[in-house]
Image (tube, rainbow over all chains, first blue to last red; front, side, top):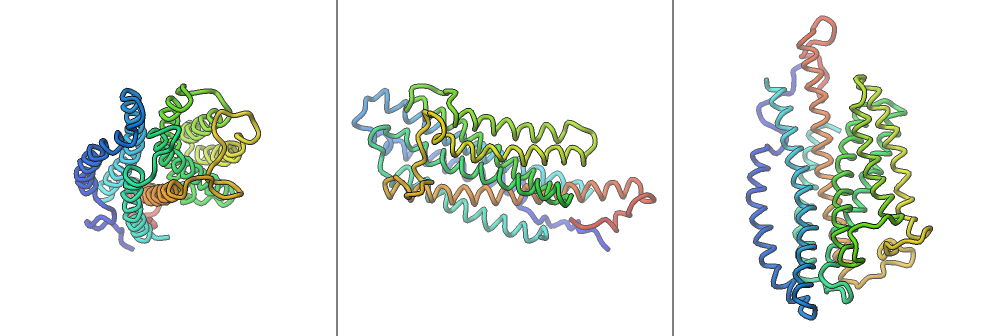
Amino acid sequence: MKLRTSNRSIFPSQRMIMKSLRVLLPIVAVGFLLVLPELLHAQAAGQPGRQMRHFWHVFAAYAVAWALLFGWAVAIARRIARVEDRLKG
Amino acid sequence: MSLRTVRWAGVVLGFLGVALTILFHWQVFFWVPTEASMGIVQRIFYIHLPAAWVGFFAFGIVALCSAVYLWLGEEKLDHAARAAAEGGMIFTTIVLTSGPLWARLAWGTWWTWEPRLTLTLLLWFIYLGYFLVRSSTDNLDRGRKFAAVVGVVGALNIPLIHMSVYWFRSLHPQPVVARVDGPQLHPDMATTVFTALGAWTLVFLSLFLFRYAAARLEAYADRVEAARLNPTRSATPEEVMAP
């Protein structure tokens, strides 16, 4: 019986995931910039200081959530890359 | 289930999850109406609630796989439980960070020791203990069994968290979606929250499958290395069972 250690990875490679992140992160950043006027407009009835504070709390909540999820995805990709290196070596 | 099947399931669920995630972000920032009394900050709801649900779902998987692992002793079930526990920790951390950011503006305080918040923090610490217990002993099997017990016992906290707003005097609002008489939300808000729930469930399942596959590959690599180091006492590398 032969070991299943072919050169072709069965998982998306770490490089591929990092490349996807490099594309996705600017899209997310531009998205937030586009969203900013909409958010402020929606709060037009409130006071200016309060509007900005609300915006930053929403921004922080979504940023933390996405940082955690991206972090977990990258950690998994690195783990898979490491174990595949072990199997090849 | 073979690793190839796990990979394809992970990739398909991941693509669907990302597509739904883009849709729910569009809904949150461009489509759904702004809540009248709280304003923009209420939009945290669309990540807070789905993260809580997915976290509970993940810890449910941990409890189920751990219980069956204690019964059958199958290594794959421990891999699945550990993968789900990581996801559960991630999503519960999202709940515990988005909640205070919302509470500061809605309640005027970052944190209060009221039942639901306290029990959710307790859940996070129980599953932190799940990882600490696992690595607390040199005996791998014993560590797995201790962790499995924590995984099962910890999930008993989930129904308590859900019922705490009914049983105790609580600052946290009562459920507006998971109600016997149906969601008490504006239809557009309900649509957005269900889209977000679907998106994050798919994202979680995709990452869970990849994490589970990584754990199985690691176990396989360990067996191969053990066989290489000592071919006379155990199987040769060629005889080691594929992951």
